[in-house]
Image 1 (cartoon, rainbow, N blue to C red):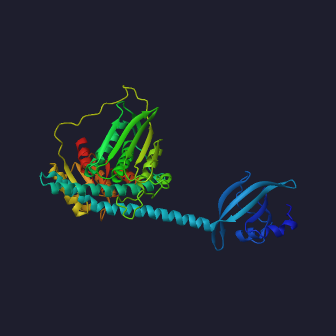
Image 2 (spheres, rainbow, N blue to C red):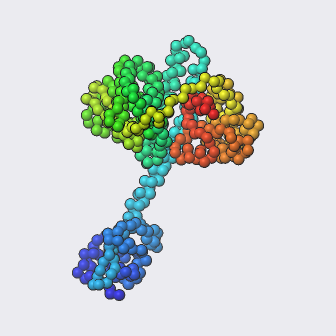
Image 3 (spheres, one colour):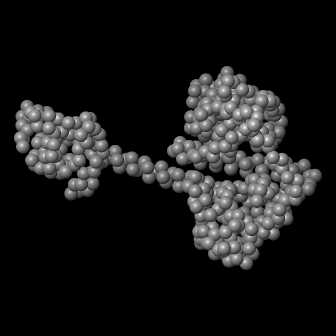
Length: 474
């Protein structure tokens, strides 16, 4: 073994803060500057084994742990093969990155805590929204000619829907930015989601006395994608058009075919977009309305969500505006499928047969939510019982023998997942329909529901029409 003597370079190398070493093919140190000895906490180190695996590739890079008497240290290690006077070995550079690693870990921890906070925030806000929406649905079931009562019900319903939309957007954009959104792909005709978006926003458009002009191609356009997510895209765009267009104005929705793309254009005559804002309109927390009044509200995340959803479907979205007060145009392009008539399926019409009536157990420790949902279900002719905790739910289920269980997740004793598992373990509940009804709606929550034995996972505040349709399909 030849110990390297770099008398002319020693002084230079000892002035830098990065550790520099040369080792032979066996890992024995032939040279080390002062920074290397300090970083490795070994002095003298020349002639000792480095005991760190070296990548033989040229300019290799890796992060390594160094165990020192005062604790663990992270180092960035770069190495390259070196031939020194016919003796094979490696030149190694070490940089202390402990502070950077600590900062990265702190950011990961903060990000995880943020996700946990958002999930808890959504859950806590969804809980009070649930009985409000249930109560409104109950009021709508009552036949009344009082225009003030009808107006009040519609206002409350719209505002609950708006609040639920904000919560969904807040959580969705966080999941998408982290790549946690998964798509449920299916083939469907574009008209389905266009009509869905129109019906979702019709109450808002009518309340503002706006005219919605619709122009759709008569040729079916088939899409492969997530039906719910793409309906969400168009619904958000129509909702924005209605919010940012004055009462009595026009909104135009046009659907055409260009080459192999379906093109959806939503044009309004509203407040428009300033030239300096237009290039950033799809960025997170950017809003077109910068007035002090900020009368239309919103978190500035809806368009970010729309762009992300369109792009993960292989499409594009653009925005155009002549300026403030000149309206806006949003154009969505989605790739279509080549479907011949034999591959398409005609839509099934709803059955005119009487709706099946079920024995249903509602489990929720939030009394207002449980009682209001129970009254709604009873109004549709179902036989309903309630329980306010997991233990009571299991006991009541064994007495009542429900065919359907609507089960909250956040219960005070056993959580809903554990209740579902215990029910599934009983022979009489192996074929029962378990429906999670909860404020927790992240991807991992849905996966936990599935693994616990739930058939469906519904979010609060409940869309009672969705639940009714689900019960009709059982």
